[in-house]
Length: 397
Image (cartoon, helix red, strand yellow):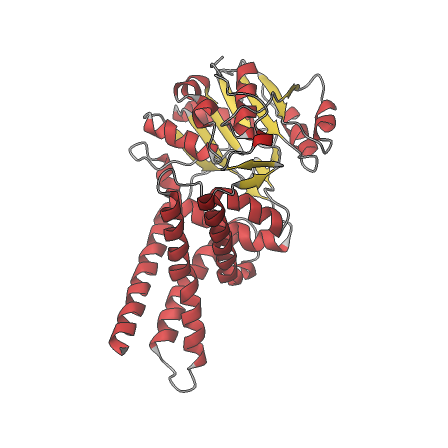
């Protein structure tokens, strides 16, 4: 029995060591948006499309920053999805500087955000399309730098990883580990390898060439996808086009959620739906893997410490210390990169346990057909009150 336990502990050590190596190769020295803030040789018209719904807490700062963007040829289109919290009134303060559209009734089979983006696209005239979110804040040079980078790289889409605004305790504990897991899942820097299918789109900032966006079918092609950004990136890569994903902490800031409840509901809608096929099995496998390799090592370490008085150099202590050090090191490096105290990294196992709880909740709701509520709409199951018009065929503009 002792041999079996030692073998299992050794196997776990090897797996986590390889995991840490993969983490280093794909995430360390991640490319960032170049600091080229000179007007590009050609300044194609950019249509900024901003879908909003009940975002009164953040939309004013967002629109203000977009209006202040220094770029010679830009239009800003805000599509309001029937907000009831004063969002529309806040946007109207910028009348003359932005075009405000009222979202048409949500057709059957469409996710609200995707429908709003589609309506904004149909109204747009730009050669480039920038889709962004109502909780984002943009620097004045953000668009010039993004357009320069897209043109220099001859890319079809540029998507940015923003500075994460983390103000509450639970944001600081939970958000970095979740970001880390997502980056590892998609392959980090491998997204920028044109020879690989690794793909990631961040809906907080996606800058498309119009022809590329239309070639993959735009938001109409992902109309029913909650993770529309990821799916658009996958379609782009599948079509053989160039995707670039870089960090941009000095030009873009986003505060996704403000409380534990928002974090839970926000990530719950994503966990189960991230897989296109065999959702329930892939979700269950992710839950088991997270528990086995991201939680169990800390339990092993705790047990090893508890038996130190009778067995000072026991295998539980040695393997637990080794694996936990590697796991803590990864999240500590990430926390330091976003100017967060590394002390929050000590709560990594708690963060993973909460995320496992979110995953279990998401998997249960998704597999049983309960759906996911978000901004007063429910996705993942048919809701009569949500479908306010018969199916429509939307043609590209």
